Image (cartoon, rainbow, N blue to C red; front, side, top):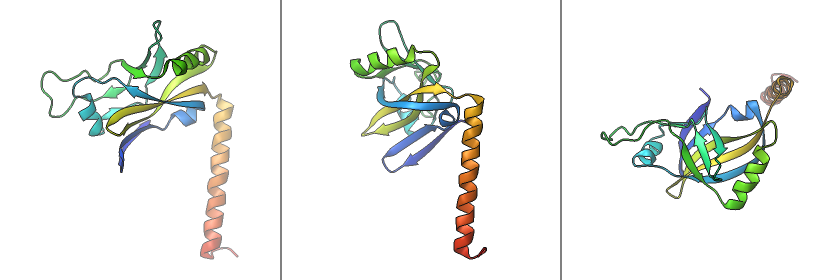
Length: 163
């Protein structure tokens, strides 16, 4: 399971945790999402997943989020939305142009990092990412293991297990 949803004080937050393991996040942008009908109600229930989602900019210069799964609303009727469809993102023209130029470089991609509701509006944090090589992932694992061992040693020292 690559994404996680949690309710927090300000509203809902759905995270894409695998991004930091697979990519270097170079830059972040916050974008609005164009939603249809009952999609916002389903989002407020926490019924969304962005683990396999990605962002592309079409020929007209509009960013679209693909493969984001927003489950059908539980109390909806036959006029409910489809679960997987492309959803348009709302960004300033200057940000779109900057993302388009950066994403055209080899090895760069646009990935949704976090989906949240802010002041009643659905927002998505989009990251400009570069894929990690296998050796980069191994280095991250080594660093995390070293940090975990250091934290354990400090905790043991505080508890008095080791002089």
